[in-house]
Length: 231
Image 1 (cartoon, rainbow, N blue to C red):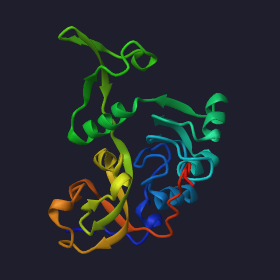
Image 2 (image 1 turned 90 degrees about the vertical axis):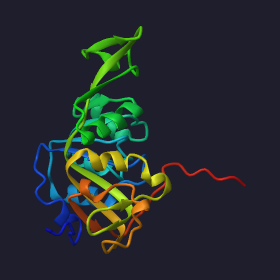
Image 3 (image 1 turned 135 degrees about the vertical axis):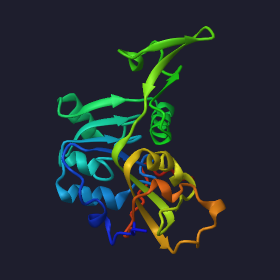
Image 4 (image 1 turned 90 degrees about the horizontal axis):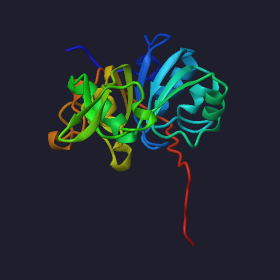
């Protein structure tokens, strides 16, 4: 069996070309593939299409790639925390496709499951359904949504083994499992990399069959977008 283990993010992302489509896990700044995004920024690869629930903040997460104008198009659900995103969109520098959050997750899951498209009632009668096929089932209208498959998927897990079996921790699980399914080549960064067999099979959230490259990350900031405390 060929090894899936890479020494670092720079090695793991090698081969990503200009114009690639990337699917990235995370919700806000929670569970984002920090090391992989940073390495991608340093690589200079550009003209990217990025699929992610949101676009980070101005100076962190996908906001780093917006700073260097490496992203051509974003498919996202929520982008309200990123002023740079807004400026680039309004100036015409950035293409944007807003996707309802549940639809985005299901489009990724469908891509990984080999389902080319599905019908959903979400977005019917709105701009979301513009130029899309609709169909009626049992008297209710549904819109056809196509699956998402990325050239690469970036995910962040708490623990993984050398085969690529992944365990996510609490809220950081979010979009990561469906993102892992949606990449032709999935790159997983983990806080702890263990030997095969050290993870209880019942605890695996993403089976290693979905992961082609894995490395142990480092220096995680794990920022909080908006910290609210009580006195």
